[in-house]
Amino acid sequence: MPRFVSVYVRTVDAINYRIGRVMMYGIFVMMGILLWSSISKTFFLPSLWTLEVAQFAMVTYYILGGPYSIQLGSNVRMDLFYGNWSVRKKAWFDSFTVLLLIFYLGVLLYGAIDSTSYSLQYGERNPTAWRPYLWPIKSIMTVGFFLMLLQATSELLKDIAEIREVKL
Image 1 (cartoon, helix red, strand yellow):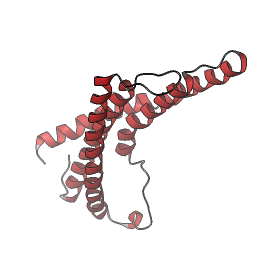
Image 2 (cartoon, one colour):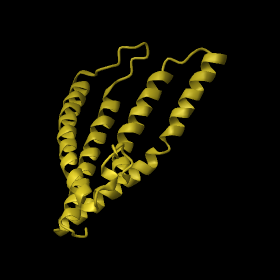
Image 3 (spheres, rainbow, N blue to C red):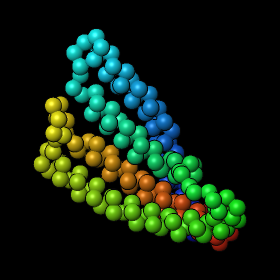
Image 4 (cartoon, rainbow, N blue to C red):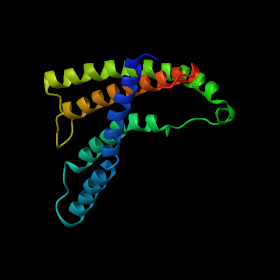
């Protein structure tokens, strides 16, 4: 494999690894928000912002943690036949399915960019009592889809290297 492929795979994997390790602690952020929500509803006036901030935190946790999950191979896979296949056959199958994933992520990224630009242009707000701006979460989703696309491409290149029996 060309040197730039190895550099690309190592760079994307390193970036998504670091982001994924940080996002692992996002569960504690969500727990803190929901704990405050419970406490404020019990002892004080209910907060308007807690449900939406918890939802935004969950989206951030899920979207930015996705590339790390793919990198570790901890995504859900039907293992009826796959587990008994050779490494090369798995690589062939994975390279085909990751092409479908790349197409899907490209469509999601296109829509996310369009939605984020609309949100920035018109100052879109959530139609709730708190009315937060939506561009921050849409920007995070766009970045997450982009990182997922980069990671899927990295996985495709790893599968191609495995098929060709080349070390990256």
